Image (cartoon, rainbow, N blue to C red):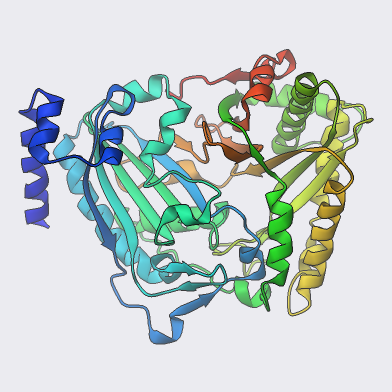
Amino acid sequence: MSQCLEGVRHLLASLQSCCDLELYKKSRGIEDPEILARETLFNMDIEIISQESIKPSSPTPPNLKTFELSLLDQLIISPYVPIILYYPNNNGDTIFQAIERSIALKKSLSKTLTQFYPLAGRVKDNLSIDCDDVGANFVLALVHRRLDEFLRNPDHGLINRFLPFEPSFDESSAGEARVTNVQMNIFECGGIVIGLCISHKILDGAALHTFLKGWSNMASGAKEVVYPNLTAPSLFPAKSSWLRDISMVISQSLLKQGKCVTKRFLFGSDAIAKLKTKAATNGVQNPTRVEAVSALIWKCAMAASKEACGLQNTSRLTHFVNLRKKLGPTLSKHSICNLIWIANAVCPDSHETTLDGLANKVRESISKIDVEFVNKAQGDEGYIAIMKSLQEMGQVASKGPIDNYSFTSWCNMGFYEIDFGWGKPSWVTGLVGDGVPVFMNLVSLMDAKSGDGGIEAWLNLDEIDMKILQGNQELLAYASLDPSPL
């Protein structure tokens, strides 16, 4: 390890002594076009220092070499779950101390992967994880700019550069199909940004938090050791892939071609309180902040679509629902795998789109994913309930033109508590689809960093609809557009 660190220090010294970037690149023999593109990123250089496989500290036993995915895992369309955590340098540490932290981070990751052994493998034919201990892909990068400069006015089109690769809906884009991919970005100020792309075939948002909690506890020396619960495949067994084929057809209908634009809307706690009061005017009693914000965004997105195409299409909102609390205490904590299902709300083209009416539709759709549904979806006959739910979604899509808006919420999951030993993150971001040609109308709801109940809503929409939406005065009455996270 000391030789590795000394090599990095030598590299830093040579970089600092080189005042001409082109001369530096030539001296390092950097000719790869992808690396050159990354090094000129938004007027700051990003240098890939190292890329290696972090294997589990102990080998996975032979009887655990294949991890069968559950039925719910197999129905996921997105190959990877991206997340980026931003850690400013609040301790006055040097860049060398930040680099030393990368060594501790890799050691703790190795130990964590022993507990979370499927995360050290590869996705195999979308039906199982080959737990071959290939390890996590770990990239170390130096960013020649200050983190606070980037956060002062972050460019959404560049955020994904902090990830080990660009997330997409193309399952072949990740190469080796490793489950876990990490990029640690060290800024010249000593700030650190950690970007992860982990297979969505085995982790949903709550499971991602469980893994990060386990890793950060290991890295910081916390007393609590997180042991993942890996029993979901036995509750939701997958007997064959035919149901997955049906799901893929329906999921593909949610994808669009064009140009995606990502915008962030910050709803403060006071604004959410007012929004909840308005949403409860004629219907929903005590709407949650997620219900109220979802209803408003849905309403404004429908208005944007109507203005863009000149008519009101039937509109559908889908919301991913966490099933853990409906499974009882045995699976409510530290459960790995996808324990989510899709709530489905429809607004016909002739329907009056009032906020309280839409909030009521959101609640009704989510309330259908109840304990009774979850119980029916379990066991060898569970596929029947899942199939019926998929058929209902397919029937809506078959009735004519429809605008789809998918929502997912990471609120109350605790991502702002992830501390690897140098403090909590100042910002957390998830999926950013800015600029991609194939995308889904997706709204990701995140806790605001203030911790007072605010919400950051990340909207990924077609550029024409987004241009209209970002000027919607009803939306802007409750939310601010792309404020600085500082």
